[in-house]
Image (cartoon, rainbow, N blue to C red):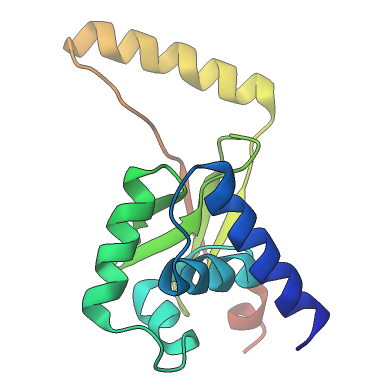
Length: 150
């Protein structure tokens, strides 16, 4: 077994232990795949990367379970494709860049000053429209380097 794979297994196990969640092979597998890829993945990609070890029905159950436990985040792409990523360990808020050509998704963070200004604007919007804002996201659309170079 490779060192990286052992590290992923150990880290997956530790995430579950730290959150008092029963350790199961399917949970470990999903967390390991997300750890290895270090970014958002489509549900279909997680299933493919499991190499037949995860059934689609199990995958959705595990995703819902891990999402309810705040271990993963789920969001939709512009094409309404469900994406999954590990929740930030440091609880840092981040946003996404979408490649309009290949569908790649990249995480990015904005300067804390900009994030604070955005929060101020959200407070104004909440007041103006008398709504409760649970969270916000900022998406950038463009072409990744690979698609630009084609």
